[in-house]
Length: 352
Ligand SMILES: *Cc1c(COP(=O)(O)O)cnc(C)c1O
Image (cartoon, rainbow, N blue to C red):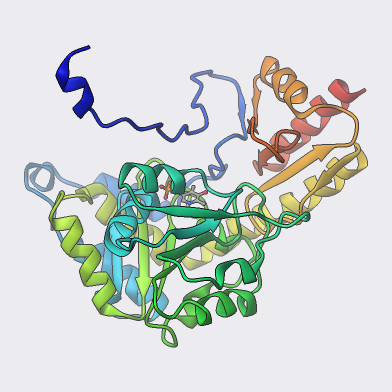
């Protein structure tokens, strides 16, 4: 063994859902939006001239940040943007979680949290979801180095009411509480309404799911406390000033302006979700209550892993987690009505 091998950073990386390159497939495995982004996005992309590409982008991404700020009625200095919310969350871990005490997050949750904690050497402790897969708010009362949870949680899809979110923040006034709202637009109430009350709250959202822009990579954090946003920017500028590229800045800004289009397609997905849940239940599935653009479902007879493999053989991709407590569940992204009809008909076939 070479001496330098001791100096290699050893990490177990996050594993995203696969992106198969099939021409004809039904892809319900990474919670992408089945509908195109707002029409203004295409126009903005067309308008990005070579001269803009020749230059470095604005490191403050003012055009994008101020559009997000206007939309939510906050100041631009209260908004931080990054390369997807994964980048925003990664910067947030580096910025806010520097205590010797453990950061708390649920045991069943977005699996990237553990990866960031490991790579940045942040101590952490996971809090078990209850038997109904709900977050237990009292678990977050003991002293800790920070708190993060998604709402709705992933991959359970379960939404926690704002009164409980508030309760967790109330019991953690000495640390930063991050609420990861990747799926909040699909029926939940955002903790953004609490940012003026709590100077230790950071809300993170993304353009990847509800705004159909997973490929453009835009996420953002909003806080009532400008100092927290400044601290995130200081960390960002210490790593890479130019995270937001020109196309993301301009096309992203167009996407958030079109509220009408946004509301229409989010409501379509919610309607498809409700219809799909009913159909899955008729086939013997149990779905955890979902306020996301996916459902977490298990069958009372058929094994999730078998269903997953058989769907894959038919070019229908869903997500399976080989993990204690959830290894009999499938996470199914809500696609178009037609895609979900094909899924249901394949499931009828498989389950018999
Ligand atoms: C999808 C997702 C993200 C990250 O999405 P980006 O594409 O990086 O914005 C963050 N948190 C949760 C819980 C997610 O499901």
